[in-house]
Image 1: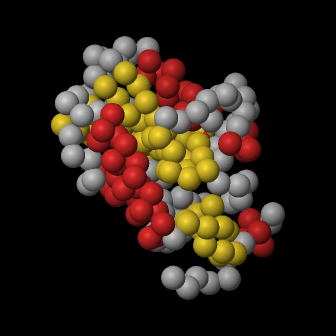
Image 2: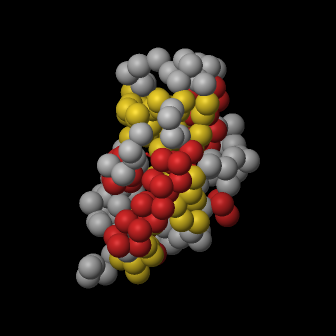
Length: 181
Ligand code: PRP
């Protein structure tokens, strides 16, 4: 797809994403065969990835949603995260997979893992579409990762710049002029 000058380049095409998501779904379908489990989606960025992944999960699976956001520029390694919407159902005794769009500093995921662990699920795993390990401030890893990416400002496929550009079908690198980088 052709984009305007706010996009520096396409990093992951829609077709590449689709192919990789099919592989992730295969892996999850194998690992969770015969198990009942819940996919927990973090709003808002992960919704596109979730929608594509979820349709390829074949097992006994349901979904729930949580909304969290980090404190932006003031975020420090203390891991301050604000929750604006909690899960709709208890997770005690359930097998849970957290679905994220990106693991960046790791602060959001570490907050979620701590909070969910305290609710005593049967198991807790993480599936993230993107991973940017070079930005990590908290030591944490996902169990299922779509793509490991370099330290570039990515938008599209759910990921935003100032709440915009989430609707782009590909994962793109934002032109540095846009954010003053
Ligand atoms: C993004 C993304 C992850 C988090 C990753 O969410 O969806 O949840 O940041 O960053 P971290 O590893 O540095 O914590 P954001 O708070 O921007 O909200 P959004 O999903 O609504 O865009």
